[in-house]
Each structure stands twice: as structure tokens, then as C-alpha cells.
Length: 257
Image (cartoon, rainbow, N blue to C red; front, side):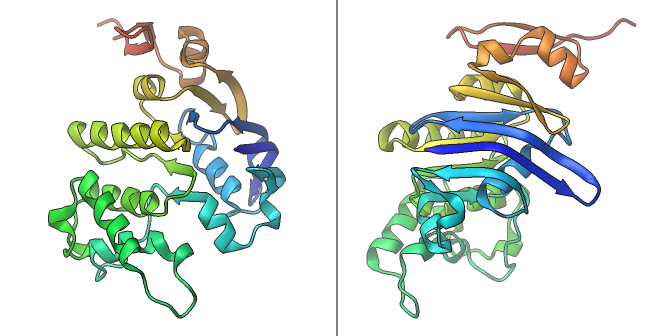
């Protein structure tokens, strides 16, 4: 569903991404991990065409460069890490923007568009906030509203940049479980950036580890979340052991006194 080869991005004088490949099959969840500044967010922006890039991106069976904006929006929904929400727009109206690719030019949203939006807000525990203005929301509430807009888009591909940032533990789990249920029920293809390595290993089918703009490792969680790779690329002392379901759990190891 997503294929990217040789992605490179230069911002100013710095090569932020260099020759990165990304292949994610339909219905698969790929989590992009790596230390701060590794190029994770830039990778998602490059796939979306939001930054100038070198390399090739294919969405479905079509080159991304050949897609018109509305065609791309029906294929891929993107939720940035730090979005700009109009402060006077209500939660419902912002989430409803996800239906824009389906609304005719100069037309209005349909009853179906509003129904889809209401359903997504309910799933993310946002119904009571539907008429509240975005400027009145907490950081965690804003993050859920951004996710709601992406899910309302009903695109077969979700690109989510740190979707659990600013969420408390319960809402983190709620959001991740909802994404996973939709992925399994509808065959969605999901690519997320995630800071929490244990969460990435718990939910994703495959991991891509970026370091200094390059792919340092890729594969199943147990292949990528090793003490050697994590210790080397995150400059951290860790112990990694299998959790109850066999997926790797990353523990920080305290230093000496």
C-alpha cells in the first residue's frame, strides 16, 4: 500500500533524510522509531509530499507525484504532531474537515459526512466537547481532535506523527486500541512515529529504526528492539525482555550511585 525508495530530504544545509526505504503492506502497522532529530517526522512529511524530497513514493499502485490533492486525500490521512487548530473553530467542525475530500466543490457536507464525524468523536470520547472551541482545549484534548479529523477522512492509509503525545495513559490506550481495531476491521495501513519503544513494539507489526536520517534497522519488533540496537542508537542503558504476549518490553537500567 505504501512504497518509498531512496527518500532523501535536505533542509537548509542539513541532510535530514538520506536514502530511506519504506515498504508497508495493506493492513500492516509500521512504527517509525528513533532518537530525537533522527528524521521520523520528516519521513512522514516526505511521503505526504509536504517537503521537497528526492526518491520515489508509490501509494497503492500509483506514483504519489501523479495524484491530485483530492485523490491523495482519499488515499492517505495525515495527522501532524503539532497541528494548527483555528482557535474559534468547534471540535465538531474541525473533525468534519476530514470529510473535505468527499464534499463537492461549492457544496455542503451530507448527512453521512456528519454521521461519520459524530461516530469518530464518540469513539475518541469527544462527544461532550463537540461544540467547544479549539482554543479552549487542553493539549491532550487537542491531540484527540487531530486524530478524529484523520479518522473521519476514512482513508485506507493513516500517517500519524506521535498520535499519543500529551495524552494521559487511559486516552493513549483508547486511541491506540481504536486505531488497531479499525486497522484490523477495515484493512487500514498505518504508519506512526512513536517515542515509547514498548508501545511501538506492542502495537506495530514492523518497526523502522532511524538514526541520523538513515535506516539503522527494520523488521519485526523483536528484531529491532534489541539491547544492542537500542543502547547504541538511543545512548541508553536498557534491559529488554519478552512481555506476557512475547513482544519486547524495554526497561531503563539505572546507573550506579
